[in-house]
Length: 94
Image 1 (cartoon, rainbow, N blue to C red):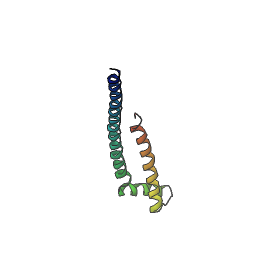
Image 2 (cartoon, one colour):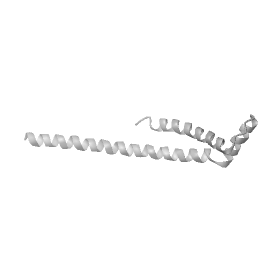
Image 3 (spheres, rainbow, N blue to C red):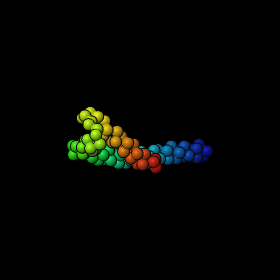
């Protein structure tokens, strides 16, 4: 009798842990998908040639003439900042 009760308790604890992990993995996969979609949208916005030209003209207005590599670095830094805070926001409930 005691062995059966212990066996039921162990099985219940084991399967509840698996269920919790499955629920966590499902939620994590959903959050990862959201982050990937947002990253793709950010990349489309920040890497678009029209945006590059606008930013380059903006820097030229203030007297800075950045080359292609420096302009790419600026865009990657802005992308990184936006992406960092987006990931913080999306994953804050996990």
